Length: 240
Image (tube, rainbow, N blue to C red; front, side, top):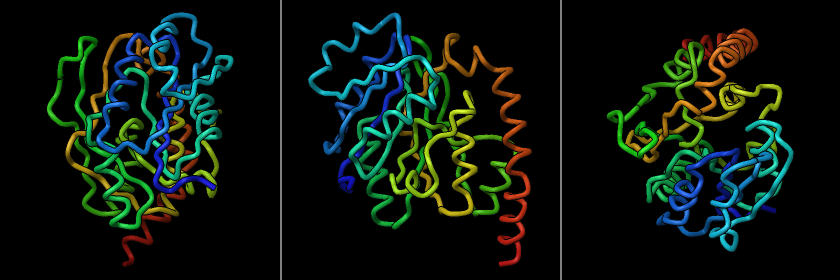
């Protein structure tokens, strides 16, 4: 049984030069009941950056299979009652986990995400807060019909979700996060923190830049797959 006070932070790692900054940001969290699971997805460079952290992390190495497969490997090894995903090039703000846990525990909900800042390779802030507050369930549904506004590294969720609905779908190499959020919609209410609690690094080597065309094709497939489900949920909301 998972420890309901513990948060499992899974960091998929593939040749990322910023992974030490990601790890530092988890170790600096004001909430301390955290396990850190780094899943090395067959990296060939920058693995040495993990050496100083080996006593503080669970390190899992696997053959390269993509981010969803790395996340799933980490989830299977996790012992926490809550799950957070941190991309190896992103940075948690110090109170991120604590603030999100407070929201989930006070509301009884199972899913929370937050606003974030975009930063560049040097850690310099590029934007004001990127913020997509949902004024209603109807607004959330309408927004997710057109695209994914939920940054995966901002999410904290109850691991019971995985037991009920399954893990990330590894068939979606670039939109596995969007697919899971769409899958959750009929079953869970969401909460959102408008304060930015993540620095999201934008750089030329990031997957959404390198694989942008394949990502667009996957988005179209997902929207076609879940369109009827979302329309049914919208009709339900409109009838209230």
